[in-house]
Length: 111
Image 1 (cartoon, helix red, strand yellow):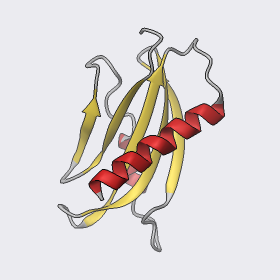
Image 2: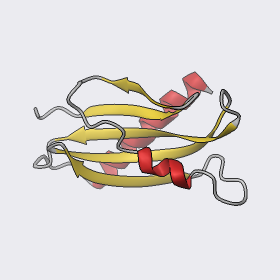
Image 3: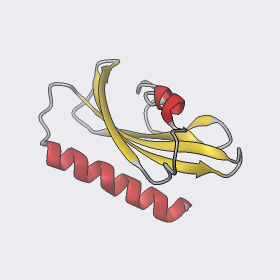
Image 4: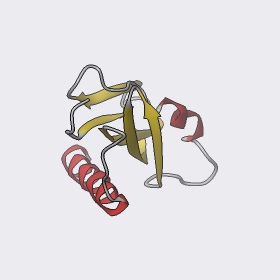
């Protein structure tokens, strides 16, 4: 992988799918496990969670937001993932700011 930062947007919208992925070799369905936990008691809408993983020779940081999947009429989620070379150094504050910015831009355009 190059030194570039790549990103993936995936989640539930009439089923689980990728909304954006620039490079075909990037990890697929990093957030698939979050689906099992998207329906806790109470009102989870708008709640967020963060995760990271090392997969396919990349380091991936993800922000998940619990949303209402209108097409399925069910609780769903959307994940915003930054992927980059695991040997690249990037401050945690920068990663968090990029994830939050991605989420803000997406939610303003979609919701």
